Image 1 (cartoon, rainbow, N blue to C red):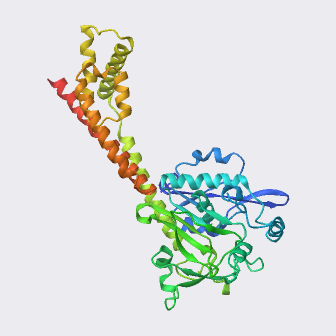
Image 2 (tube, rainbow, N blue to C red; image 1 turned 135 degrees about the vertical axis):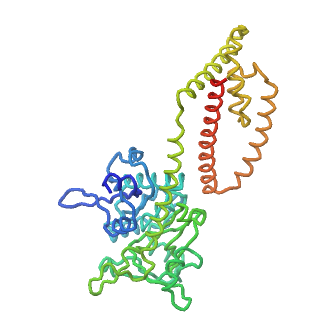
Image 3 (cartoon, one colour; image 1 turned 90 degrees about the horizontal axis):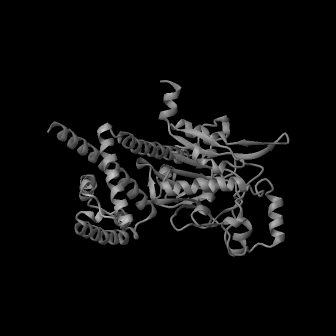
Length: 430
């Protein structure tokens, strides 16, 4: 298989780089563990550079089949913290000094990643957030963060057990307990590693911030002993086989590897790489769904006869509009030109209020106006009922519904074109 074929077939996962200072110059990088897992499960990582102006060029990275967001600096508090912080200026200074490598806010990265997260939520594109990426997802949906876990949780709940979420001296080897919530994806992935129904595993983490108020659409999957949410997902957008995956993990499953005997590819638990595996599975399914839509669109091309018929109908509408706007009566010789437009309108049984206004403007009442209005009023009642029903649906259900009817619209147009073509063939033969 040619390299160009692979580039066309394999799905694309966008990953935003992180900026670092090396030899007095800024360099962008992404941890290789993330890249290895994405490639290993069958997708192509596409690195989005964290440079000024990229947020205006995100359309250039299409098609987007998945987004993985991972490490980075603290998110700008102004993006989520509407109320006054409980931390004093002195405490904030102390936090900046203690966590100097993470507290330098990168607004450019914030803008890029929030834009991608919101795009995924709008289109239901598979999204996996690790560490900072989980925080971005929560903020994008209206959630908030602790600016410093240790200080804020200690103030709010002094009786809560203290947990070390970061160890600068032992980045890879640091572990702390989390309790997994039953009947969640994490429970499914780590089921075989849980002992005596304790529902606990040891995870690697490297963060001083975390989810404070979880956005309403999400369900927690794991908690640290101090109560911090260590993982969450959207249950309405989780079905990897159907291309649905919206999830955030505060800990680092990709780094949970046995350090003894240099076996860097041996994970602490068999379930560690599952998040990446299921994420890429969703990415592949989403790509397939997207490609099927494109195939339908590409198949809808008019031949010469249909194109000619389309021009005749457009001319008929244009003539009707001119008669309506000028107020002049049409000449008997123009009646034959009006007929194709009137016949086309008679076949349209689902007219919206917007179409009703357009038809009035174009003089569609020249023929059979009363029957048109009856159909449009009936459609208005149907629209009201549909709005009430859809108002009770979730964002994901509406997204799926929109995708379904978009596809049905294309198929209906294709069938209509074929019928018009058949009709043209009969006219010529007669």
